[in-house]
Image (cartoon, rainbow, N blue to C red; front, side, top):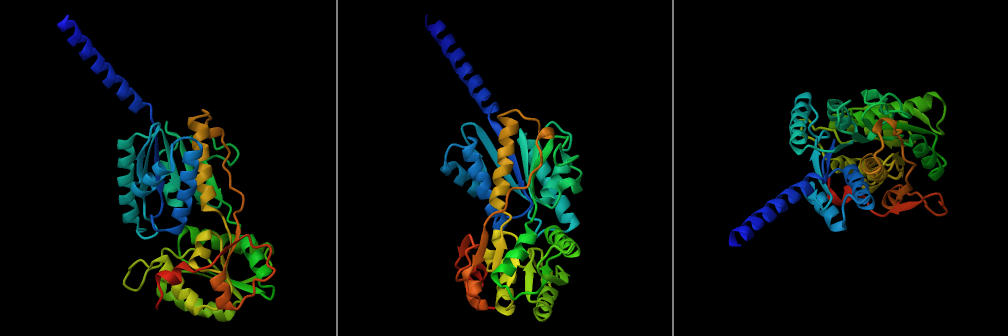
Length: 369
């Protein structure tokens, strides 16, 4: 009898190990790649959308799990394992740096064995996404600037045709200029000030097209695109004399004369102190930084809708080849009160403004200089 009990105990323990291993195997595995870095305000906004959707669609069970994922870039919940990798291509953007980053992340993905990959923004979509085109792993991108056909990942917006689908940014650039004019009716001209990044170039190109098609209420007088912080500052001072307003595109890939990456908020603080013209951007991060107005192309919505698509593929068993690529609806019209006060702009009766931000985070981080 003792031998039989021992045998049953061994069988019970083995069965427990088998079922435990099976439960681990059955957990959904999501691998997320961000093109950028943790401190980047856009990345923080998209992450909020990702976490909200992970909770809403039952990938995670609690806000505590979402917070752990945000802090550690990893969470293993009851049903889902989520891992995140950062490319940091705003600051490490040479060909060799990107090649090394892609090799590292590809090895991480190989070891993780994901059921689905989510790719945040252009560089992840292009450099990682193209490694998995027509593979057995579904891929969802978010945050591509303009039409995502440019990377060869899809056949069309309505019928992607492969294992890849996702979310793109339409920009709402026309709305940015329209609402800036509505805020300051006396404006007649504007200029573009941008870094020489994928995002910055895409925004400038779209605004120039809108200008060519005569769809803007202000006339575009000049475009400046550079990654030299010295030149960016010098040109900003010139633009101040040439234009009534400035569209401030991305300024995350600027480098100083020693080749050091310049923090977005450092550049923003200099700009806010020296440039005294109304300005706008296209994402919430820029009005948080201190720019006057944005028509928000919401990072939150980008991240949320991407995880919603993951739900459709993994839980509803839809084929990514048949899920249309979409651009979410516009976010809020947002105005920064501190910048308005600096420029002497009266906000009384501006009922079209949907959200106000009171402080300029660039000036708070860099109070001098």
